[in-house]
Length: 338
Image (cartoon, rainbow, N blue to C red; front, top):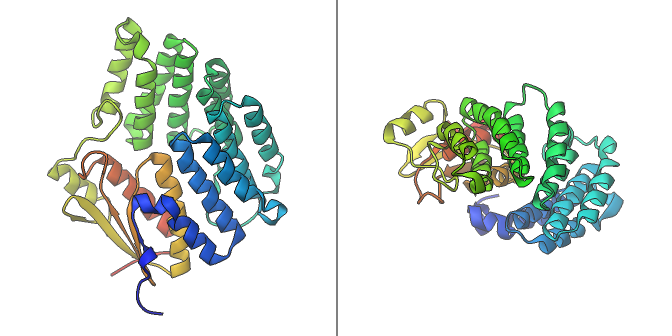
Protein backbone atom coordinates (compact mmCIF):
# COMPACT_ATOMS: atom_id res chain seq x y z
CA UNK A 1 0.00 0.00 0.00
CA UNK A 2 1.14 3.54 -0.64
CA UNK A 3 -0.10 7.03 -0.09
CA UNK A 4 -2.09 8.48 2.80
CA UNK A 5 -5.90 8.58 2.80
CA UNK A 6 -7.41 11.98 3.43
CA UNK A 7 -9.19 10.76 6.56
CA UNK A 8 -5.89 9.86 8.28
CA UNK A 9 -5.06 13.46 9.16
CA UNK A 10 -6.82 13.73 12.53
CA UNK A 11 -7.44 17.03 14.29
CA UNK A 12 -8.80 17.15 17.83
CA UNK A 13 -12.14 18.47 16.65
CA UNK A 14 -12.70 16.25 13.63
CA UNK A 15 -11.60 13.17 15.51
CA UNK A 16 -14.60 13.31 17.80
CA UNK A 17 -16.99 14.27 15.01
CA UNK A 18 -16.84 11.10 13.02
CA UNK A 19 -13.33 9.97 12.18
CA UNK A 20 -13.19 7.49 15.06
CA UNK A 21 -16.46 6.03 13.93
CA UNK A 22 -15.22 5.79 10.35
CA UNK A 23 -12.08 3.94 11.41
CA UNK A 24 -14.15 1.57 13.53
CA UNK A 25 -16.64 0.89 10.74
CA UNK A 26 -13.82 0.21 8.30
CA UNK A 27 -12.45 -2.35 10.74
CA UNK A 28 -15.83 -4.17 10.64
CA UNK A 29 -15.24 -5.05 14.28
CA UNK A 30 -18.53 -4.75 16.24
CA UNK A 31 -16.67 -4.34 19.51
CA UNK A 32 -14.55 -1.46 18.21
CA UNK A 33 -17.65 0.11 16.65
CA UNK A 34 -19.45 -0.14 19.99
CA UNK A 35 -16.45 1.33 21.78
CA UNK A 36 -16.28 4.25 19.35
CA UNK A 37 -20.00 4.93 19.88
CA UNK A 38 -19.37 5.07 23.63
CA UNK A 39 -16.45 7.46 23.04
CA UNK A 40 -18.73 9.74 21.04
CA UNK A 41 -21.29 9.49 23.84
CA UNK A 42 -18.59 10.63 26.28
CA UNK A 43 -18.10 13.75 24.20
CA UNK A 44 -21.86 14.38 24.19
CA UNK A 45 -21.73 14.01 27.98
CA UNK A 46 -19.11 16.74 28.18
CA UNK A 47 -21.39 18.92 26.02
CA UNK A 48 -24.38 18.28 28.29
CA UNK A 49 -26.42 16.48 25.61
CA UNK A 50 -28.09 13.80 27.72
CA UNK A 51 -30.45 12.52 25.04
CA UNK A 52 -27.62 12.31 22.53
CA UNK A 53 -25.64 10.23 25.02
CA UNK A 54 -28.58 7.89 25.56
CA UNK A 55 -29.14 7.40 21.83
CA UNK A 56 -25.48 6.71 21.02
CA UNK A 57 -25.14 4.18 23.83
CA UNK A 58 -28.37 2.50 22.83
CA UNK A 59 -27.03 2.12 19.29
CA UNK A 60 -24.11 0.18 20.78
CA UNK A 61 -26.31 -1.87 23.11
CA UNK A 62 -28.62 -2.85 20.25
CA UNK A 63 -25.92 -5.37 19.28
CA UNK A 64 -26.86 -7.27 22.45
CA UNK A 65 -24.89 -10.43 23.23
CA UNK A 66 -22.77 -9.99 20.09
CA UNK A 67 -20.74 -7.45 22.06
CA UNK A 68 -18.08 -8.40 24.57
CA UNK A 69 -19.35 -7.80 28.12
CA UNK A 70 -16.74 -5.05 28.53
CA UNK A 71 -18.24 -2.97 25.73
CA UNK A 72 -21.73 -3.46 27.12
CA UNK A 73 -20.57 -2.38 30.59
CA UNK A 74 -19.02 0.76 29.08
CA UNK A 75 -22.18 1.56 27.11
CA UNK A 76 -24.46 1.05 30.12
CA UNK A 77 -22.44 3.20 32.49
CA UNK A 78 -22.13 5.95 29.89
CA UNK A 79 -25.87 5.78 29.21
CA UNK A 80 -26.29 6.32 32.96
CA UNK A 81 -24.36 9.58 32.59
CA UNK A 82 -26.80 10.56 29.86
CA UNK A 83 -29.70 9.74 32.17
CA UNK A 84 -28.18 11.93 34.89
CA UNK A 85 -28.11 14.83 32.44
CA UNK A 86 -31.84 14.38 31.83
CA UNK A 87 -32.56 14.17 35.57
CA UNK A 88 -33.55 10.49 35.57
CA UNK A 89 -32.15 8.99 38.76
CA UNK A 90 -34.12 5.77 38.37
CA UNK A 91 -32.49 5.08 35.01
CA UNK A 92 -29.06 5.90 36.46
CA UNK A 93 -29.38 3.28 39.17
CA UNK A 94 -30.92 0.70 36.83
CA UNK A 95 -28.12 1.04 34.27
CA UNK A 96 -25.28 1.00 36.81
CA UNK A 97 -26.78 -2.06 38.51
CA UNK A 98 -27.20 -3.84 35.16
CA UNK A 99 -23.58 -3.09 34.26
CA UNK A 100 -22.53 -4.47 37.63
CA UNK A 101 -24.17 -7.77 36.72
CA UNK A 102 -21.83 -8.10 33.73
CA UNK A 103 -18.51 -7.14 35.34
CA UNK A 104 -17.61 -10.69 36.36
CA UNK A 105 -17.87 -11.73 32.69
CA UNK A 106 -15.28 -9.24 31.41
CA UNK A 107 -12.44 -11.49 30.25
CA UNK A 108 -11.34 -10.31 26.78
CA UNK A 109 -7.77 -9.39 25.92
CA UNK A 110 -8.50 -6.18 23.98
CA UNK A 111 -5.95 -3.45 24.77
CA UNK A 112 -8.56 -0.69 25.14
CA UNK A 113 -11.41 0.12 27.50
CA UNK A 114 -10.03 -1.76 30.50
CA UNK A 115 -10.85 0.80 33.19
CA UNK A 116 -13.91 -1.21 34.19
CA UNK A 117 -11.73 -4.06 35.48
CA UNK A 118 -8.62 -2.08 36.38
CA UNK A 119 -10.24 0.65 38.50
CA UNK A 120 -11.43 -0.36 42.01
CA UNK A 121 -15.08 0.56 42.50
CA UNK A 122 -15.35 1.59 38.85
CA UNK A 123 -19.15 1.53 38.65
CA UNK A 124 -19.63 3.27 41.99
CA UNK A 125 -17.32 6.01 40.71
CA UNK A 126 -19.75 6.46 37.82
CA UNK A 127 -22.76 6.40 40.15
CA UNK A 128 -21.21 8.98 42.46
CA UNK A 129 -20.39 11.23 39.51
CA UNK A 130 -23.96 10.88 38.23
CA UNK A 131 -25.38 11.67 41.68
CA UNK A 132 -23.27 14.82 41.83
CA UNK A 133 -24.61 15.87 38.43
CA UNK A 134 -28.16 15.21 39.67
CA UNK A 135 -27.59 17.56 42.60
CA UNK A 136 -27.68 14.73 45.17
CA UNK A 137 -24.79 16.17 47.15
CA UNK A 138 -25.18 14.13 50.35
CA UNK A 139 -25.63 10.82 48.57
CA UNK A 140 -22.74 11.58 46.21
CA UNK A 141 -20.49 12.47 49.15
CA UNK A 142 -21.42 9.22 50.91
CA UNK A 143 -20.59 7.20 47.79
CA UNK A 144 -17.25 8.96 47.33
CA UNK A 145 -16.34 7.98 50.89
CA UNK A 146 -17.01 4.34 50.04
CA UNK A 147 -15.12 4.56 46.74
CA UNK A 148 -12.07 6.09 48.38
CA UNK A 149 -11.90 3.24 50.90
CA UNK A 150 -11.33 0.87 47.97
CA UNK A 151 -8.67 2.92 46.16
CA UNK A 152 -5.15 1.58 46.80
CA UNK A 153 -2.60 3.99 48.15
CA UNK A 154 -0.49 3.55 45.01
CA UNK A 155 -3.25 5.03 42.80
CA UNK A 156 -2.39 8.58 43.79
CA UNK A 157 -3.83 10.37 40.78
CA UNK A 158 -7.15 8.54 40.91
CA UNK A 159 -7.39 9.16 44.64
CA UNK A 160 -6.72 12.86 44.13
CA UNK A 161 -9.39 13.17 41.42
CA UNK A 162 -11.94 11.32 43.55
CA UNK A 163 -11.11 13.44 46.59
CA UNK A 164 -11.65 16.60 44.56
CA UNK A 165 -15.04 15.30 43.40
CA UNK A 166 -15.86 14.27 46.96
CA UNK A 167 -15.09 17.80 48.12
CA UNK A 168 -17.28 19.23 45.37
CA UNK A 169 -20.12 16.92 46.43
CA UNK A 170 -19.71 18.10 50.03
CA UNK A 171 -19.95 21.69 48.84
CA UNK A 172 -23.12 20.75 46.96
CA UNK A 173 -24.47 19.29 50.20
CA UNK A 174 -23.86 22.68 51.88
CA UNK A 175 -21.00 21.29 53.96
CA UNK A 176 -18.18 23.76 53.22
CA UNK A 177 -16.06 22.79 56.24
CA UNK A 178 -16.08 19.14 55.17
CA UNK A 179 -15.25 20.19 51.62
CA UNK A 180 -12.29 22.18 52.92
CA UNK A 181 -10.83 19.27 54.88
CA UNK A 182 -11.16 16.90 51.91
CA UNK A 183 -9.62 19.53 49.63
CA UNK A 184 -6.52 19.73 51.84
CA UNK A 185 -5.62 16.14 51.01
CA UNK A 186 -6.56 16.48 47.33
CA UNK A 187 -4.39 19.58 46.98
CA UNK A 188 -1.39 17.80 48.51
CA UNK A 189 -1.71 15.03 45.94
CA UNK A 190 -2.18 17.55 43.13
CA UNK A 191 1.04 19.35 44.08
CA UNK A 192 2.90 16.03 44.36
CA UNK A 193 1.72 14.60 41.02
CA UNK A 194 1.33 17.87 39.06
CA UNK A 195 -1.77 16.31 37.50
CA UNK A 196 -3.54 18.57 35.01
CA UNK A 197 -6.74 16.58 35.41
CA UNK A 198 -6.67 17.08 39.18
CA UNK A 199 -6.07 20.80 38.79
CA UNK A 200 -9.17 21.04 36.61
CA UNK A 201 -11.24 19.09 39.16
CA UNK A 202 -10.07 21.44 41.91
CA UNK A 203 -11.03 24.41 39.75
CA UNK A 204 -14.56 22.94 39.67
CA UNK A 205 -14.44 22.73 43.47
CA UNK A 206 -13.38 26.37 43.64
CA UNK A 207 -16.48 27.37 41.67
CA UNK A 208 -18.71 25.18 43.87
CA UNK A 209 -17.33 26.96 46.95
CA UNK A 210 -18.01 30.48 45.67
CA UNK A 211 -20.98 31.02 48.07
CA UNK A 212 -18.39 30.96 50.88
CA UNK A 213 -15.55 32.80 49.14
CA UNK A 214 -15.66 35.73 51.58
CA UNK A 215 -16.02 33.54 54.66
CA UNK A 216 -13.03 32.14 56.56
CA UNK A 217 -13.58 28.71 55.00
CA UNK A 218 -13.46 30.25 51.52
CA UNK A 219 -10.26 32.14 52.25
CA UNK A 220 -8.68 28.99 53.65
CA UNK A 221 -9.62 27.09 50.51
CA UNK A 222 -8.07 29.77 48.29
CA UNK A 223 -4.84 29.44 50.26
CA UNK A 224 -4.87 25.64 49.96
CA UNK A 225 -5.52 25.71 46.22
CA UNK A 226 -2.99 28.45 45.44
CA UNK A 227 -0.02 26.07 44.85
CA UNK A 228 -2.21 23.87 42.63
CA UNK A 229 -3.76 26.62 40.55
CA UNK A 230 -0.54 28.63 40.22
CA UNK A 231 -0.17 27.55 36.59
CA UNK A 232 -3.86 27.96 35.75
CA UNK A 233 -6.39 30.74 35.35
CA UNK A 234 -9.64 30.95 37.33
CA UNK A 235 -11.47 28.46 35.08
CA UNK A 236 -8.67 25.89 35.07
CA UNK A 237 -6.97 26.75 31.76
CA UNK A 238 -3.19 26.21 32.03
CA UNK A 239 -0.91 29.23 31.74
CA UNK A 240 1.93 29.32 29.16
CA UNK A 241 5.30 27.80 30.04
CA UNK A 242 8.48 29.82 29.71
CA UNK A 243 11.17 28.76 27.24
CA UNK A 244 13.26 27.49 30.15
CA UNK A 245 10.35 25.43 31.48
CA UNK A 246 9.71 23.94 28.04
CA UNK A 247 13.38 22.93 27.67
CA UNK A 248 13.34 21.30 31.11
CA UNK A 249 10.11 19.46 30.33
CA UNK A 250 11.42 18.08 27.02
CA UNK A 251 14.41 16.64 28.86
CA UNK A 252 11.99 14.16 30.43
CA UNK A 253 10.33 13.36 27.08
CA UNK A 254 12.81 11.52 24.82
CA UNK A 255 11.77 11.62 21.18
CA UNK A 256 9.66 14.77 21.53
CA UNK A 257 10.82 18.03 20.02
CA UNK A 258 9.60 21.57 20.01
CA UNK A 259 8.19 22.87 16.74
CA UNK A 260 7.23 26.48 17.31
CA UNK A 261 4.28 26.60 19.71
CA UNK A 262 3.76 22.84 19.80
CA UNK A 263 5.67 19.70 20.69
CA UNK A 264 5.72 16.66 18.40
CA UNK A 265 6.85 13.06 18.22
CA UNK A 266 6.65 10.39 15.51
CA UNK A 267 6.28 6.72 16.44
CA UNK A 268 6.99 3.78 14.15
CA UNK A 269 4.02 1.49 14.60
CA UNK A 270 1.96 -1.01 12.62
CA UNK A 271 -1.13 0.53 11.05
CA UNK A 272 -3.76 -1.50 12.89
CA UNK A 273 -1.95 -1.09 16.21
CA UNK A 274 -1.87 2.66 15.56
CA UNK A 275 -5.64 2.71 15.00
CA UNK A 276 -6.17 1.01 18.36
CA UNK A 277 -3.70 3.40 20.00
CA UNK A 278 -5.57 6.38 18.55
CA UNK A 279 -8.83 5.19 20.10
CA UNK A 280 -7.15 4.89 23.50
CA UNK A 281 -5.41 8.27 23.15
CA UNK A 282 -8.75 9.87 22.32
CA UNK A 283 -10.37 8.26 25.36
CA UNK A 284 -7.64 9.48 27.72
CA UNK A 285 -7.63 12.90 26.08
CA UNK A 286 -11.33 13.31 26.65
CA UNK A 287 -10.90 12.46 30.31
CA UNK A 288 -8.25 15.12 30.87
CA UNK A 289 -10.04 17.50 28.45
CA UNK A 290 -6.93 18.05 26.36
CA UNK A 291 -6.30 16.68 22.85
CA UNK A 292 -3.45 16.11 20.43
CA UNK A 293 -3.45 16.40 16.65
CA UNK A 294 -2.72 12.92 15.30
CA UNK A 295 -1.32 12.14 11.85
CA UNK A 296 -1.79 8.46 10.92
CA UNK A 297 0.33 7.01 8.12
CA UNK A 298 0.77 3.46 6.86
CA UNK A 299 3.62 2.67 9.25
CA UNK A 300 3.80 5.60 11.64
CA UNK A 301 1.81 7.86 13.93
CA UNK A 302 2.75 11.47 14.68
CA UNK A 303 1.38 13.38 17.67
CA UNK A 304 1.47 17.17 17.90
CA UNK A 305 0.33 18.98 21.01
CA UNK A 306 -0.39 22.56 21.98
CA UNK A 307 -2.96 24.15 24.30
CA UNK A 308 -5.74 25.57 22.16
CA UNK A 309 -7.69 26.95 25.14
CA UNK A 310 -4.71 29.09 26.15
CA UNK A 311 -4.22 30.54 22.67
CA UNK A 312 -2.05 27.87 20.98
CA UNK A 313 0.85 27.99 23.44
CA UNK A 314 2.72 25.28 25.34
CA UNK A 315 1.56 24.56 28.89
CA UNK A 316 1.82 21.95 31.63
CA UNK A 317 -1.18 20.22 30.05
CA UNK A 318 0.87 19.50 26.91
CA UNK A 319 3.69 17.91 28.88
CA UNK A 320 1.26 15.78 30.85
CA UNK A 321 -0.49 14.60 27.66
CA UNK A 322 2.83 13.78 25.99
CA UNK A 323 3.71 11.44 28.87
CA UNK A 324 0.29 9.79 28.57
CA UNK A 325 0.65 9.29 24.80
CA UNK A 326 4.11 7.75 25.27
CA UNK A 327 2.65 5.20 27.69
CA UNK A 328 -0.31 4.40 25.44
CA UNK A 329 1.73 3.93 22.27
CA UNK A 330 4.28 1.80 24.15
CA UNK A 331 1.41 -0.42 25.29
CA UNK A 332 0.45 -0.89 21.63
CA UNK A 333 3.93 -2.18 20.73
CA UNK A 334 5.34 0.97 19.21
CA UNK A 335 9.00 1.73 18.55
CA UNK A 336 10.52 5.23 18.34
CA UNK A 337 11.25 6.36 14.80
CA UNK A 338 15.02 6.84 14.37
